[in-house]
Length: 451
Image 1 (cartoon, rainbow, N blue to C red):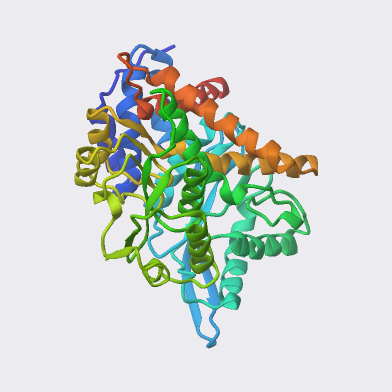
Image 2: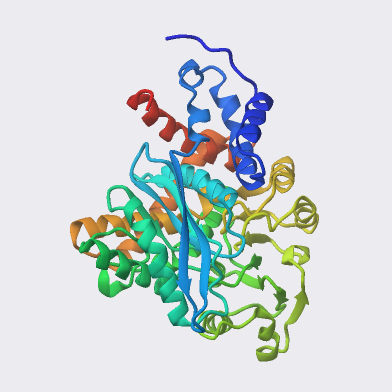
């Protein structure tokens, strides 16, 4: 085997930036992984000579396509759609579809890159992918959303399949949108296969898929606290977001004896010092999902709370924090504030919600900090179980799935400890997750040769 000159971290990242200009989110995601992987690879010549990290950081393919649809007024509208298939070394591409104005190729490449390691950590045979469009479902009628989803799938269908690429939902894509897309896929192909996950229970979906990401983030948080002999009983929690992940994270914290103080959306955050109880969480779910309302209206229903426009909740003192909204919502100064206010643990429910300065701050202060590729893997884990159920033409009971989810999150936690234990009682969960995920994918790639 030929020995190659080892490029250093800075040289590697310069190459990534040069190949991916104007894609800051993707470059950030690669940097965060590379910082840990380079140290791990130092004495492993096969990873260097086979350019494994370089290959993982170059998607297998990026498919871009035009999506034309007609609104209710008869106007022709044009959006752009993408599917990023990053790596299928350990299984079919797997990752969500996001409909949001902020969607760009850079965002989807970062998500697909992260998804590759996240899926590897679950222990299930799934590669990494992500897709979406800059279509904004807010303010659209149900029929407009249906027409867009059908047009989107008319282009996407040729690139996916139960053994090729299995998309799921993400921001802006829930059960309704999955239904519209699956219906179009079935109409075009005449196949009823498990090509999408997050489906309705009546037509191949899985129990607890809706709850899985939020619940999983809290299970991971509980596992971290247990290493210190603690649990969530009596702990105060600050949560961002008010969608599916945030509300179910809040729900599980309440079930485990914690007190949730905040939720948020793009307009600002609400602070309820009395605690956001299960009844209040149910109100938020109904208000956000069915009425498409704003979180600021919470204070009208529950006058003890306050709304803080245009702000994030990280200044509220707490024991634990769960960023569950979107990428780069928790910045370096926010991380310093959380630490200064006594926050002991952070579990990410969103994908890369903490910027690099924030990550470095949490690691410097050695608090319990779980990156999204580990702590929010519960959603894709249950999606993987849905794939298995579809293949077997069966469904598992809720109790079975809840236990499987707990076991998967515990397994991910153990993998992080294996590669992230720094001694002296400190576990670097970022390092542990990055190395554990990378090693599984890298070793499979070595087995396949140069492909």
